[in-house]
Image (tube, rainbow, N blue to C red; front, side):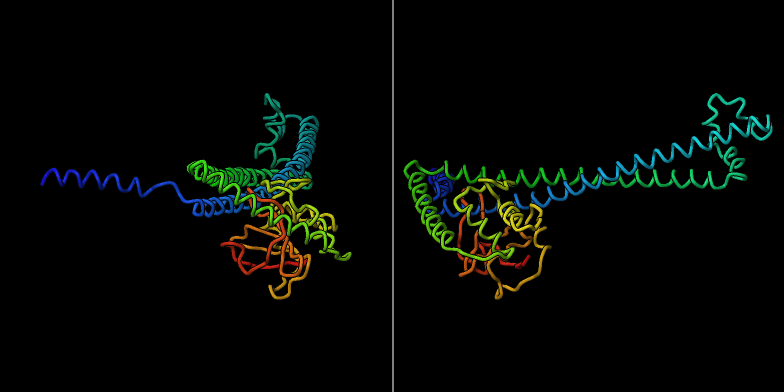
Length: 331
């Protein structure tokens, strides 16, 4: 009886290991696709963070330039008051400025409260100018410090988002490596065949598109010329793209300046309902938004979808994979 119980325990420990056998080709493909899509979502979150960083850097740079101007104005007003104090001392003798005579640093003594009171009685406008400039410099320095903290936070966030995206791609690679060689080769053939069909249909659609001279049409024609180019995060041409990099560069050809972020691009243009989209409209997916494409008409859209894929023309549906359609914008 004890021997039977011992064998049962050993068997129970072995069975879960057998149950965790290598995934099937189908399940592996599904999980790899999911992880690559997840990576694209994290990369788009990183794009938004990059946008915020660039904006904060520009604001901080402008603030520092302004602070430099204010500091020069403060120095000038301080020098003016110093000249007034010294001139007063020379004309009045020891008088109210007795301490100035014994000060190792006359200009430092000048800005003690007592000396300022002496100056203020007869030189109100000069002291007011100094006080105002000092207040503006201090306020500017406080804002710069605040922006610097925000920059630090955003850079830390960017690092996390990129790390999560790369981790998803690493997990996808591990799944592929866990397959038997013949299964890996089978999956690679299936994926290549699938992508070849999508590319062929996309190129045919792109070649047949005529369009007009509207902004949306100009952008759309540019995007369609990129069909077949590979997806690379943060890329915006000329031969590599991510989703918002493609839409940004496409609309640049039409004279519209967009940021490199789907979550920010959605704030531009006019909102259009799903039932009323026209060729050239931007389409947004995900909550939070993590994908953008351009409607090409005929129920289709052009996009740079995710790692492992190329710029393609695919069917527009209310959901793009697990991501719901959340809005369209006309520029």
